[in-house]
Image 1 (tube, rainbow, N blue to C red):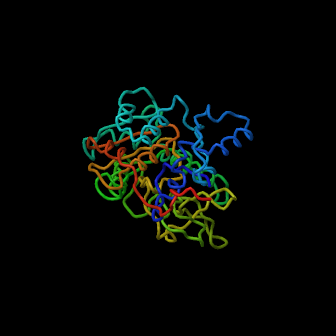
Image 2 (image 1 turned 90 degrees about the horizontal axis):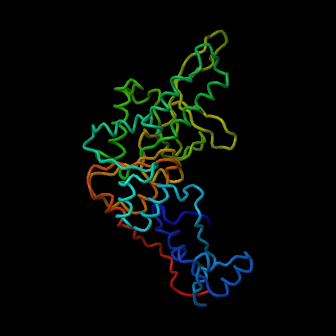
Image 3 (image 1 turned 180 degrees about the vertical axis):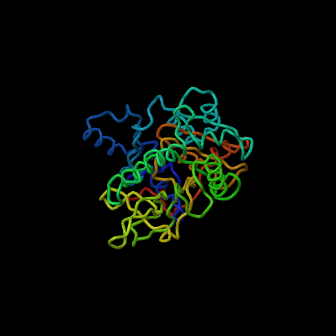
Length: 351
């Protein structure tokens, strides 16, 4: 098994991975295990911070290794430093990292309301080198194949792939679904903002540029829960000989069957999707974005935990932004680790 024990726990079964790796940070091996590891690796593990416990140490702990070197976040990474501070439940250090401006890859902003220009600036992007949703809409417009490009030309698929890649550079992450700063409210606010800027026309359920998240597996279409697609107007071949090709709205998804390329799907065949300018942190697990923005609600909430904040931070590969409308919400979340029971009894030193 390989995983990050510090991310959000599974939905129903308790914090299983966290319980299995409860003492992995300490690296507490029995003297016999420590001696064997040093013989096999040829390294002094005590110098690496590992310590020997007693022979009564649980057998599972002898089979657990903690990977400590991050290949994503080095010593100069504010994202890495912030993630480590949150993992320690150190709210003071996390706030200090966000405010003192030592690192260029993390920032926090206090929003005065739903119409705060800072929110609009982040959504549109172009502030310095930070991407926003303006990037994928620009790609959609400027790289679209010409009117003379036939339906079977590979340029349509290449264009759709470029639009999807540009969209994946930026993502708004929310702790909750409802409320002014929840997924539903922000999705509508972003669609309205982009419409006012004439970047898209979100006046119907389906419109070109609409990003959608699949919410249920559909094996007939080869789409899985969590897949993201974008509605695009493409050239469709003629249905009968002698008829002209037509333009039609289709939803482009990256193929996940190992073949690569793009799958185009009729919108009417997608009943289980939702707009995804914003998604919950839970839905974002396993994803990575060049610029990830965590939007905190204006009041404390039971779902706001240290694990949720940590998961949101580590979705960012190059830049992380925190948006908050009320003071103290971040600190309360960082100081609230998940307390869940998996039912695993690891207290007994049995074999």
